[in-house]
Length: 326
Ligand SMILES: C[S@@+](CC[C@H](N)C(=O)[O-])C[C@H]1O[C@@H](n2cnc3c(N)ncnc32)[C@H](O)[C@@H]1O
Image (cartoon, rainbow, N blue to C red; front, side, top):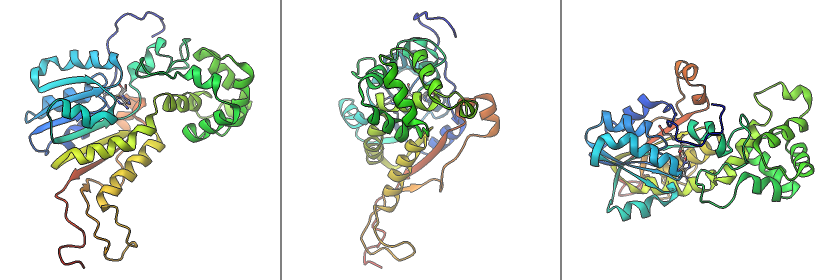
């Protein structure tokens, strides 16, 4: 897409690892699945079509996604409902709908292709647009606010922490001297000029990591995730499942740690020794480690490449020590 036309366009996003997601939710008890990042409703549609025993509540903080998902899921009538909300508000949203327990929760983290491909959203260095990057246009901080207001060392830290950017200090210095930096292309060019020429030719677009880091911070993507994972796990009924697709190592670390904490009950006993701390696991891991998309999926949809899928199932909480200890 090359135009700056902001009229309605189809919500184009290919759901990642769709068959695996549907298969993982297959055995859950009848009830409600929350798709916490409903986007264009791709995963939600597949789940509802394949699993007649579930209903689905979709959440998204982006009103454009909410509109698109409502339209896509209309065919399921009252089996589907879509609410504009941030996923760390899962529990209040459930209470407001009178839902006590969930059969499943899906998180498909990050941005949708639609958000990337709409020039005016300011997520992409491929189009010239105001430097925005807010998933929820009503939230207050834009990417332009960050690049123009953070001091040089905070900007450099942000690029290291959220973008693993090895030229963070040089980029931060270049941004500070180019201020005000107001558009995507201006930022992309500033970053490119700050990176040594040989490095510019390796590893994709030179501004990729800077844009990713700013997007993660603008939307507090890593900040809200631990709370949301914990809320999701505690809302599941026994046999209910939580499935997470992440696309960034920081996200995946948070998911892995949250799942591990729930699967061990927070056990503090040394590895390989019997548990004596009375920890009570609340989930079981459905696979050790993470699953990746197949090569065929990545060829068909390169944006799936970094996806890592993790999944757990809620179990009846029993102390790993057993009734009499061990
Ligand atoms: C990768 S897309 C999901 C695509 C969807 N699975 C599909 O098949 O169409 C991620 C979506 O999550 C939303 N999102 C990201 N962080 C969120 C949060 N904290 N709360 C609610 N929605 C969020 C984004 O606005 C985006 O629409």
